[in-house]
Length: 176
Image (cartoon, rainbow, N blue to C red; front, side):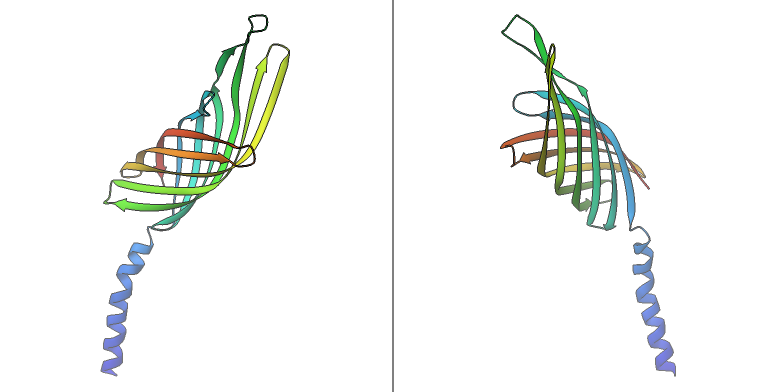
């Protein structure tokens, strides 16, 4: 009887720290920031929002959406008129691996699938192009409590269209 009680007490003491740390996970987060897309032919700016969920301390999922706010203009040699290229939307979903470096710094890598829509227009003519991409990238977050800043780079590989786009982003992060 004493051995059973002692074994149960030791087991309870061993499980309590694990249960206490498990309360931190899962942890959700949301970001809002600015992204710069470099297509090789145009530099486009966008407002980017993300929502993520850490399933475990080092693995999570993330959804991302961007809406263009900065277009690129170009000159058309016919008639001396100008045109523009605009990011209509960019959406993606990712699996994310996290590497915490203490309480305030976190590195991450992510890979996923995305869809992008751009529009190119000159007077009286507008063309919309869509493409799906395999996306991968890395970044870092700096946190103070539930608030933080995040900087990241993502490569969008449009294998169906034969092109690539790099995006750099800086965002405010709120963890909950």
